[in-house]
Length: 438
Image (cartoon, rainbow, N blue to C red):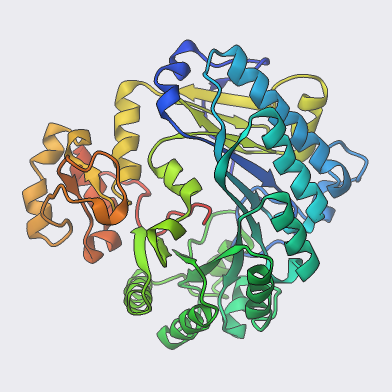
């Protein structure tokens, strides 16, 4: 199952935010994440908050059935509008919506449209908003994709993972690789932009296997690609197999070689990296929702186990769908814990997240001890020499000198972050294995 929720203070039953959350809100974007926790089967490597029908128990439990799920999701979106208003935040139209999971497209397209309609009705949807849903290649049809596009979805992110059957088998992915180009074609015909998600470093995956997956992905001509290194998380079925010696653990050197190959192949095909694990055909094809995460903008996460962040306040919902839905039905916020970040914590997060972007990290965000390390990081080939020209990536505040990772720096992003924060010798999890929604 998915990992435990983080430690924090109890969240208030009414969900109201402290006054500090409203400071500067008018200058920040607002996004919405809608979590759909359902999967047909649980992949052996996955530790997300997802459930199969057998894991959820009786379908009559509130929130435990796919049939009743959209209604509970709509309730939380309505709650979000009430809480933001009552907490004194200015009204802002939503600039991005991302529906993730799980496999959101296990729900009928009409239910996904209903979720988006709730955002439009209760929060407001900005003109030109980016609206994405994740999907498995075998969970869509031409009709369902056309219905999503008609409802206002602009983008679909397919979980391709690999084009090689034995790699898919190790990952316990059930789709036929031949289904991917078919699903991409249907999405294109519906007028949707397309992203493909890939995973590298699976046990038994050779460099040639990985090249075959990259070539197959590029043959689909997607607008956007994500490539994440496999992480064997504690508590997963794959972790148990590795522990028993049935599968080898991922090799960091192999993963580094696969990352370098991905960057070279994608660059040669005309794609540019804009975040450590993400490439886009043009700057306009970057996932705006995820860029907002990395820039520390505001978002409301609706659904079981979903996390939210508004103005330095982070909170998280009850993890189990039934517990989440029961709280909503009782008129109570589904949030069970939260933390209010102080200035020091927010400064650390700005470095942790911002350094991952190709637009670079403004030197003004780096503490003095970290700035003293910049020359060494440049000499070690981990950072480019500081420069103010960020026009190529559309970064804000382009007049500030910015620190940008080199290819080697992307492979060692955790070490760069530790140096910039004065944490050298400590452990964290900021390297290329970090995953966000594509």
